[in-house]
Image 1: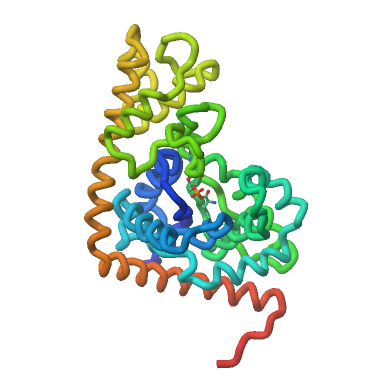
Image 2: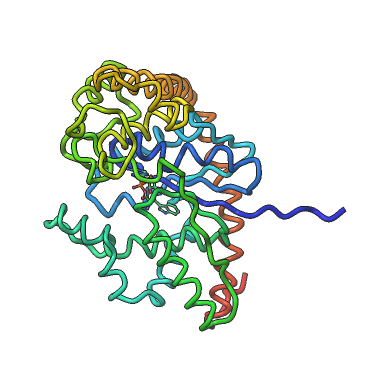
Amino acid sequence: MDEVIKKRVFSGVQPTGKVTLGNYLGAIRNWKPLQEEYDCLYCVVDLHSLTVTQVPAELRKNTMDLVALYIACGIDPSKSALFIQSHVHEHAELAWILDTIAYVGELNRMTQFKDKSRKHADNINMGLMNYPVLMASDILLYQTDVVPVGKDQVQHLELARDIAQRFNARYSDTFVVPEGLLSKSGQSIKSLQDPGAKMSKSDPNDNALISLTDDADTIRRKLRRAVTDSDTCVRHGADKPAITNLLNIYTLCSGLSIADAEKTFEGKGYGEFKDAVADAVISVVEPIQAEQKRLLRDKAYLESVLKQGADKASYLAQKTLSKVYRKIGLIPRIR
Ligand code: TYM
C-alpha cells in the first residue's frame, strides 16, 4: 500500500524572558491538534533571541524552560520533532544563501524591525534586520506547508513566501511555498493596559502581560487591573477593544462561545467578569506549570527528546541544503 505522505508543519518561539498568554493562545496552543494530521517540527529558536542582548545563563535556563513548556502544552515528542534551532547548523547556513535573495529594501520595511529598532536604539544590529531571513530559512529548510503563528508574524511569513518564490523562479522549483495558519480569536491577544498594542514579552509594564509563569494571585491581580472600556457592558465589538480582548481570552480559556459568554455576564459588572476571566486563565495555566516543573526535574528525558528531535530535523535540513547548494552551483565536498 502507498504510504500517505503527511503535510509538514513548522513553528517556533524565542526563549526570551517570559512566554506570555499571547504566545500560548496565539501559537503554542494550536500546535497540539496539528500533530494528528501533520508531520510537525517545533523549534526553540534560540538564534533568533540573540538579536536582543541576552545574559548567557538566563538564555540557557529560558531555553530548557521552553522545551519543557512545549511538552507541558501537549507537544508529544513521539509524534513531533522538538528541537533547538542552534542544534541544526543548516538554519544559519541556509539563512546566508537566502540573504543573497532577500532585498535590503524589503527587510527595512518590516514592521517588527522598525519597532525593535525604536525599542533597542542602542543595538540595531544586522541580526535584527536579518531576523526574517533566518525565519524564512527555518521554514523553507523543512519544505514546510503550514506555519501556525500569531498575526504579528504574518508579514514575516509573506516575506518567506516571496523569498521561496524568487529562489524557485531563479533556480527552478526547490522550496515549498508555505501557508500561514492563524488562530481564530487568539491571533492577536492585546496588552491588558493598552488594547491597541499586542501583549508582548518585552513590555516594560509587567501588568500589561500575563506570563505563563505567573501564579494564580498575580494573574487575578493583573486581570483586575486590566483597563476596560467606557460603558459597563460585557460585549464583543470593535468599539470595545479592551473588553473584546478579555472576552477573547475568556472564551479561549473556558471553551464557551462569545455569545454564551456575553449572555452569562448580561447585567453584571466588570468586576465579576474579570474574576471569571482570571478563573478561566488560572485553570489553563496551573496544570501547564505543574507539568513543566515536573519535566524540568527530568533533565535526562528532556535531553533525549532534544537529541531525537535534532536528529530528525538534521536529516531533513541536510537534504534541502544540499539541494540548494547544488542548484546554485556550489561544488559538493568529496567524502
Ligand atoms: P515569538 O517568540 O516572538 O512569538 C512566538 C509566537 O507567538 C505569537 N504571538 C502572539 N500571538 C497572539 N497574540 C500575541 N500577543 C502574540 N505575541 C506573540 C507569534 O506570532 C509567534 O507565533 N518570529 C517568531 C519565531 C520564529 C518562527 C520561525 C515562527 C522563528 N522562526 C519559523 C514560525 C516559523 C516569533 O514571533 O517568536
